[in-house]
Image (cartoon, rainbow, N blue to C red; front, side, top):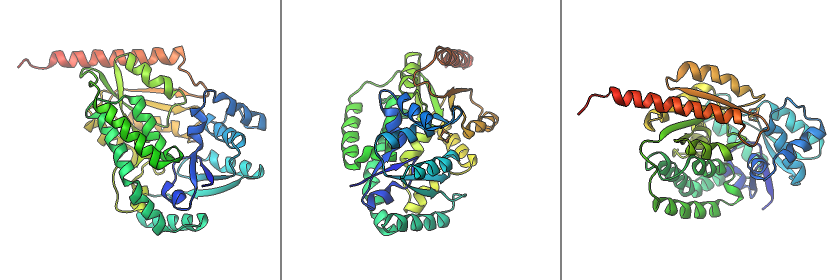
Length: 339
Ligand code: SF4
């Protein structure tokens, strides 16, 4: 099956039903031992220093991996993708635009999907069939999420990795399902994480230093039990149709949809504190103002650019945040009436 690159989550069912192997260019970028290499390729081609690393990384991956077809999400993700698409076309790639509707409206989504199916040479019916085939795999992702927050048997990093990979299912959805099934079996044989650990929510786009972030938090008494965007990528809440599924997906729409989803999960998962990751030069960082004005829980905002390891500065801020949460919790516990 020919490979097709994607710049963010798109209706993967369409790509699969059209006979493509999806490749999430973001995952290839940060999944290699030296992602800086891809950024250098982009900067040598003229991408400015003040452009987001993810955009530069995607460009570098396309050049290096001989990707010919790329779906560029031009609405509902990142305005930089518009210009990235133009540059990819200049370099001779077949860059195909995909735009999420401006509002989460099922009728508009159905029209968008119909048009997308025509572009790819498939049909909405074939994509629906694919959606049904993927139901079991998405159910496994939901089970892993439960193992993370409900049964305390999976780490924040494991949760991140499995959920973020659902954008392309690692290029082979059947293998992804088998591997995740095996992993879930392994998790159920573990001893649970301690009850007294601090329970954290991670909101915002995936961090460039995710690989170090999650274990660092766990070494300091906390654990991420909610990965907002990654969980959204996985689309684990069942819908009746493909249009419904991509309408429920909060990431492409206004921050209001995200806040509704996050608020529900913060309460459900008994979260002690929120870590909001923002990417340098990203317009989404401005949403920090709204999150801070909305959520009542303590929130730490951390930033990343092209630093794929945690800096001492960020480590110190995370440690201080966890210390503060632990002190808050012990004060609350002392105030509780004795039984
Ligand atoms: S992090 Fe922000 S600027 Fe970078 S690709 Fe994502 S949406 Fe665009």
